[in-house]
Image 1: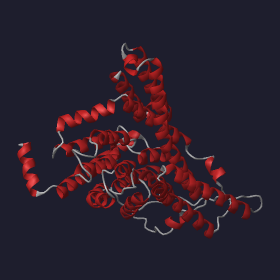
Image 2: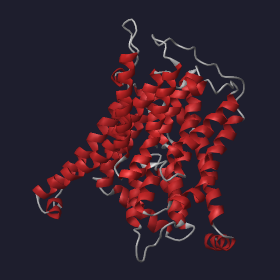
Image 3: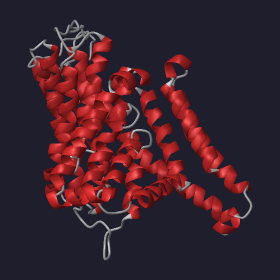
Image 4: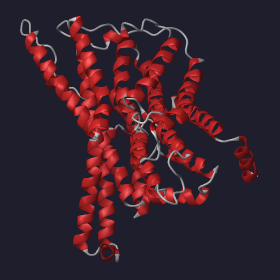
Length: 455
């Protein structure tokens, strides 16, 4: 069964990567992959002798599969509805020309300066919001700044790197950091102090490298008429309400202890009602201002379904115990002392570019529980480095992070193009940032011991 599931998963990922040569939409492949993995998992167990007895009979097994599906679908739906709410809010801001408030302030047309401005803005905005929401906002912004598609893809790739790096050092910036923060493995001040510099280096290194090849000026797209001119005060109102709704999500989660998608949908509901009132009030000559209803008509549904398929496939690998076995194998191979646990984190980070980082981090949390006799206690370097690696390692492939998948769907970026143009830049930032973290964390004495162990 394990061989069959891994083979199906690899073939499915290959088809997603080769979307353009195969001329098969990645969403269709992801949906097929999600359903097929679960079907194979179920059929293998049903017809393998002895499995039913281990579960206590066929009825108990069916209950297990049903519960597993509902649980994992619930976790996936949280991300899907979060994405739906965020994309709707951002698209509504765009429909109201709200991003002009920002783009009008960015006056430079120098490619190198623009790269630095966008990367720094993305890095810190991602820590405040989260990497996926920030990526969606920044891509909408890029469409107002850069006309050429391939040129925009290059900046969008750097947005993915900056968003993931910015989310890694904040307790609310990335879903895996949130998991470690809520689970008690890391505390707020400690995770910021220990990972901020490494995350910043992870963002800066690719920007510096790419900056050497950027010359000239960008060409901005022509302003297109929206049919009805949006008054300036309404543009600002919808922009600030939309950004406020996004910023409100982590506040809502902290206060209510409810999932972030509820905060996102709450913010969307408030903005929806506001735009309905505005649309009625400012209707002229039969022309109405946009509302959430009109915006939802052109929200990118295939991207949302792509998320659904790929996350359900990963959840099947988790339920089948494949991800847990992988984590256990890493533990046995490298051990639980320095430099072993650093290698484990680095490998988890690389794997998170292929397999969703959430179950990988969840498996690590399960392997090393807190409490009496814990191998890695609260604020141990293992957890902090895990937050960095799992958060930034997903940048190595465009489908390796929520931010990457969101940008891929919005800009239709080709997997192979990203692999050729961005992956090496992401890897350079990932490794240099990791070295900075290790050098900052390890004392001179421990470094000497490392050298002895390696020798």
